[in-house]
Length: 292
Image (cartoon, rainbow, N blue to C red; front, side, top):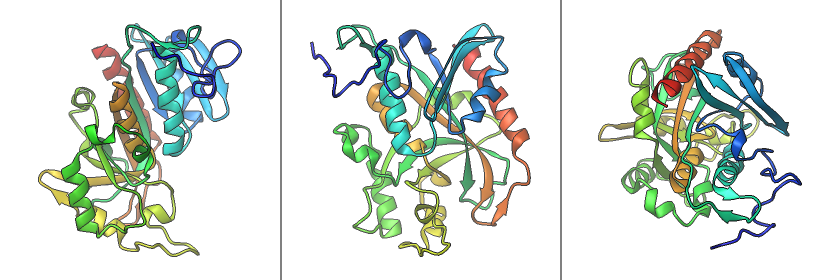
């Protein structure tokens, strides 16, 4: 059996994965990930009890009980580079024996739901609405570093997207990975559904121009006008493609549900999205623990 070297799997002195500071027993089968560190306590305040807390860098974790079921909530920070750390280390914590550095004979398969905020790319999606991501369209390039991409990529969507946008040759291949159909069914009502485009930055990669000009100034229009059968791109954010890609490769169930805080077409920005976030948190906690 493969033994993972110290340079590949970095552990703390007490055998926790390095960045997240977690071990197997700290992590519930149902995991909620959020970008904002402050949102961890906002969610865990709903738990009937909290049995574990840790914090290292931007990664804050609380595990506890809701509706009689154990739930973990973890902050990831911003970007697919952070998701790369989070997904690999979550999987290592639950599926690799830290003493032997070997893969456990029985794997744990986590339900991982990202709750976030994003910008709408369709005129009919209002601010404060919820979008559940059927697919993550990765403009970030992260999954191109993993050999399993070809086995999970939605090639038809990627190819049609490149043709539609006249994708620049210097940009990363836009991979596209489907989210968990099982988790998506939990959010079957009162949400918009569609592809979520994941950008490697907040400004130029999302078409924003302040002092620096974009190399693709019509990117948002092209994203919004893309359609392939029933598929359209609903929104823009910075984590979903990596979550879905790494989740599929590591055999975890992943879903993103976002509150729309801005409509990039109408240029409308929400005055207050706190109520929508509260409703999303309650909805997610109830649905995850009901199906567990």
